[in-house]
Image 1 (cartoon, rainbow, N blue to C red):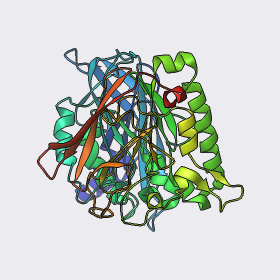
Image 2: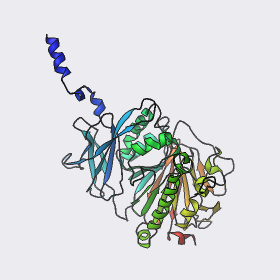
Image 3: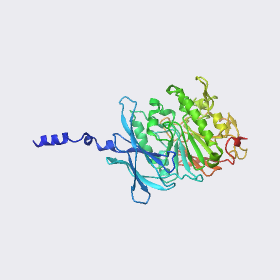
Image 4: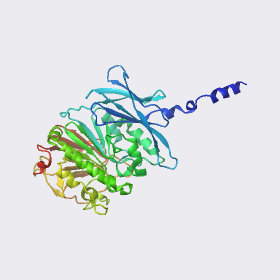
Length: 437
């Protein structure tokens, strides 16, 4: 009789109580800048539907004195098991620029660990520091531990991950993506983790990238722009040139958006406030690798466009040159390469002695060697005329946006225990297309 009573008692309990607590536990926490003043977006994942809550407070104040609520979306992986997860997003607003906050996220069914972040300083005189890299996988993420330590030590204000995550997020019905997002939580939960799509995000029409990250804008993170310090940063997709089966219209929509965004950024009042224009996207226009990728071809799709589509798809080199883009950040090649200022395969150094002082063309950096299962890419034996420095070491790039005229970049080799193997200062006393005159 007692066993019958127990059966009746537990049989009448709500179904949710039979779900293991781990199904409600937040994981894969990461933050991003939404492009709105005094705001940050907190994103995380649970296996079952719960409330979406962030509790936060100023560092040193009463813990969790503020609460913000958001919502979750059901994401179904395209694999054979149609695995489900819930992606939660909460906009935290009215933050004090430059102030440190502590937070956790989740619901009464389960909370994350406690993390901290610094609200972005929105002054145009702010001198932010970035870590830049692409092509970091779940397997062999060699640069990860060094980036974890430096991020938590406060060395960076923003992370720019320039495409290719996990290798690949959709594998094993999305579980590889879960593992990767857990790995980067030790970086991405502390500083804005800003991203762009790479070729390894192709599966199911880039669905993992579109759903798992929370970038500004209304194009599911495929392209967007935002401001920080004296820079206007533009992130876009090179993949629209290669996966036209997903819709050639995306390529043209992005091109028109880029054109409009650059026109707005070049309005005199905007260029005066944010003189630097920096782009980030995955596949480079130029490279001196030997793997037969697009950038090894004389007429790169990204650089010159596609004439095998109807209508012809425009490239981006002329557009960026005409609007005075200062710095172009790329990845995809599993190497580091710094280019001389270049346009249409011609070098336009500022001078022989000071090539990066008032250069007459944009500067390109390829930084795709953070570490992944595909290991390194090789180089052609003889560098191109526009290739200034190259290395196959695992590593990443640091960028310090010093002020409206000076920017410092350096390459860290993880193979050489964090040694800086390359550095230069880009100096621009004039910005915009007139800088090329």
